[in-house]
Image 1 (tube, helix red, strand yellow):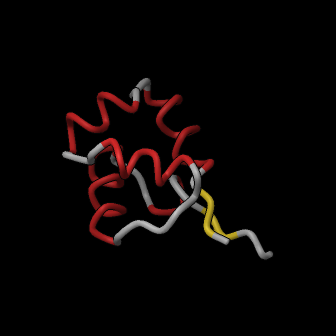
Image 2: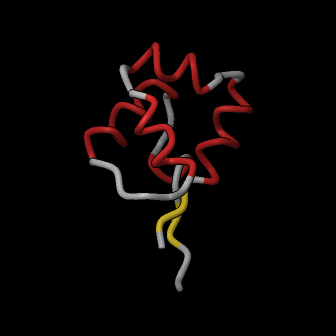
Length: 66
């Protein structure tokens, strides 16, 4: 299972709120909700997140075996 717990940690470390993230990279509120519940998202969204946060993919998500 892919989880986005690291995303929230990275955002906190960088002082970025969900609102700021939505505004800076054009991610809508539905996608933020999907990230909060570890639902599927598109790879282009992952790219936007990494660009906006200036981080690597491992800084925002991780795989945890079921």
